[in-house]
Image (tube, rainbow, N blue to C red; front, top):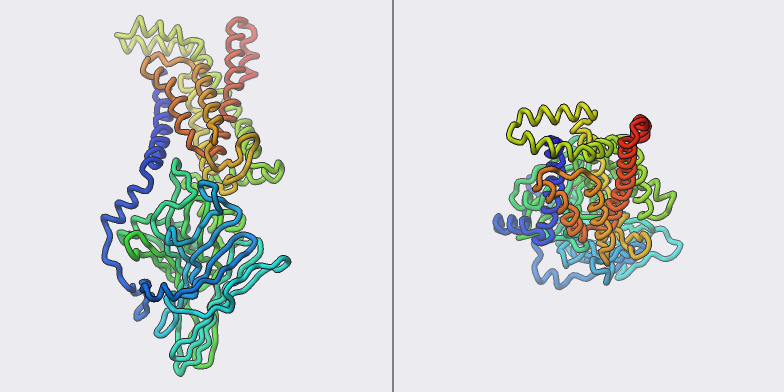
Length: 550
């Protein structure tokens, strides 16, 4: 009995710790990251050596910034701006997603967060992202019936080299192709390299639920090293550990529900880099080689750039491992099939809210035998609780005799004191994985369910679901045997209130899952309790009750 209580207490304590950590992040967002950046700031450098004799200059003078002009781009999925300085993608607004306050479309890239996608060439007298280009147009949009549009930005160096940066925007896609074309009209052969990087500050992204902790920062994937996340603080402290070179792989900037990624399609040796630029600004990128160009020769290199939501099917189709930016941590092996099942159910029912309900029922059915064994054990424990209390009152001063009498009672009533805990422990990884699936799936964002729930990715605006969840947790607590220890009893009674208040700030999709799961658990536990009571009144039906609850 004491072991069973201890295990339950450990489970609830761990859950409470996770919720308290989330609460701390809600009340003190990004405090640790900002403190680390401030404490370890160093003098910014104008350039950092990437290869022998080759550099990328980062700083932009005020005079250069004032000269920059912007080309506006509109597709069916987003509005964007391309700067004539460097041909940088400086702003991108998603049409299908709203800001946190729902007042406007979500700006994923923009100056508010100093978040841009850049590329340039490495080599003497070659244009980098500080160079100025002439744009083929000042504004472009994707006409109806057209599958793609192209924007060309060109420049000519003093040595005569002609460089053109070409953007190709596609219909119904968050992927844009970025291509560099080089015509060597100089008098010397050159061996250039192209870099593709993402600059971002370390501030919290807009639209992120502050009550839940999700990863924000750079990430790299190679076939050999697999998926590697790097914290902002490690980049700031120059302690970032990641694959430096590989013949494959991509680099990305990840945040809750969205990602920006450079994903080269060619299998060629490449170099990855990350570094601090200025205060809270960092950059992460990738370097690709050109072939050697003799005088009069031309060459090109193209890299897809993904800027948009973490839609796993689209990410997986673009590059191996890119879907891993939807990060489930060590539970990926469990969470990935759960999301696949949720996505399949959605194709049938057509509503993400009802998909959560159906998936919760399906998981409950799969674990029905384990749950039934757990509830049956708890029901038996509840039935013998008065006798256990009687034993404790008589033998409380003699621990050895107390344990002997308790074990005798368990053997007589055929009760396993751990029977109510072990089945629950087996199910915990699945339930936690489902939690992270619902938290990480961008499909939940702004997805309606029914009634007053119009956004499964946001908190219930009227707090009705959290209140229902508190009520169901309270009812569950009353169905369970009351702990003989008064302190444990008070903790168990306080849990519904503590969890309920914290769930006021959780996305509606998560709360919906807990409510449905609690209702199903209550129904199952109530039925088993009734069977146990009936079997106690009518001993001849004892075997029938066992069979029904097995």
